Amino acid sequence: MLDTNDYKKILLEMKQDLTHRITAIDKDIRHEGMTADWSEQASERENDEVLESLGNSSKQELSMIKYALKRIDDGSYFHCDECGAEIPSARLKLLPFTAHCVSCAELIEE
Image 1 (cartoon, rainbow, N blue to C red):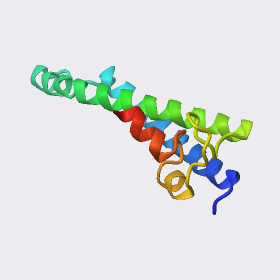
Image 2 (image 1 turned 180 degrees about the horizontal axis):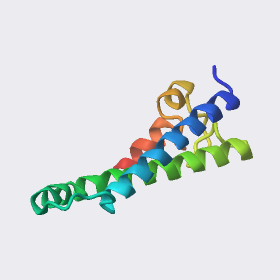
Image 3 (image 1 turned 120 degrees about the vertical axis):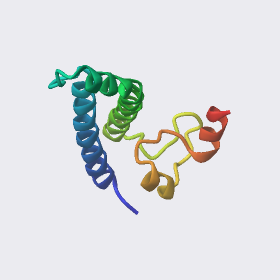
């Protein structure tokens, strides 16, 4: 079983990767270095919606990672925010930023 230091390392790496991704997406949306060709600009702008969606989901995931890191610091990381039950280690390995056990996550998704 992984301990909090292992999870913290994983979460910090994920946080760094997402921060870089968000920065790149923001740069692309601002069209830095956009070509002067109007047809190419139109094509680049078509991707803005997709980029914005990716950016929003990345920001949401980053927020969950920050919350998970906070939960590690306050000692509540291994327990569900809703019911207080222990979150299975298999779930934490798959989703290290989760704050809910499987049962509560299913209820929240409904």
